[in-house]
Length: 108
Length: 114
Image (cartoon, rainbow over all chains, first blue to last red; front, side, top):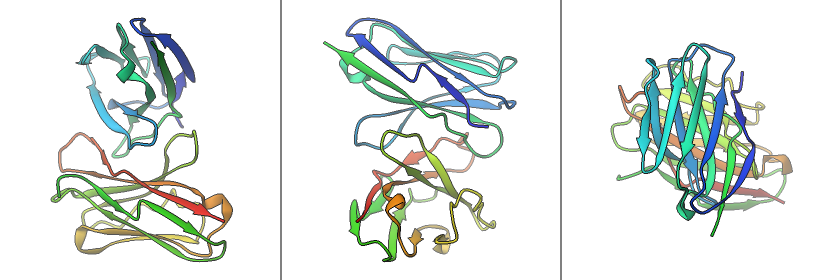
């Protein structure tokens, strides 16, 4: 039931782009994305609701395809501050079921 | 308070001892979650409180784990007879009504069982 995130880890040079994917086997009401920096608590980035809408935060955007039960997070022109682990949390009821996370490392 | 507060921030205990971890949610938030995060791993759901409803305890790994939420606010997670595999960061999150399940996390309690 846990959503599948891919890739598990990615290393980028500052300024490069990345895509993180999240797939669920269950029907979704919404998808949440959080970022956790090393040694810190997860912080909410954005929520995507049904309707295929895209959201943006800084130069980070995301899409949600409820038919395919998938969401993707797009990081454009990555900055050092984007480093951390990104978790998707598909909402299939009242509760988020968290993915295992994608570790993003940005090198100068 | 301004955010979710957890205490202690670090706890070192001996195998077999009981520990209590505390979570002060954001004032007015009706929902409260406990998660466990082992090193380099994702978030493992433990228990969920919503208002006055019976808690969802489906994630508790054993009967050594229990949690209470008093007065719909402060929550305490208790681990009895701790084992080394209980070592992890325990995160608490709270959520407001009609907030589309957006969760606000505390900084966590790092538990080390020797």
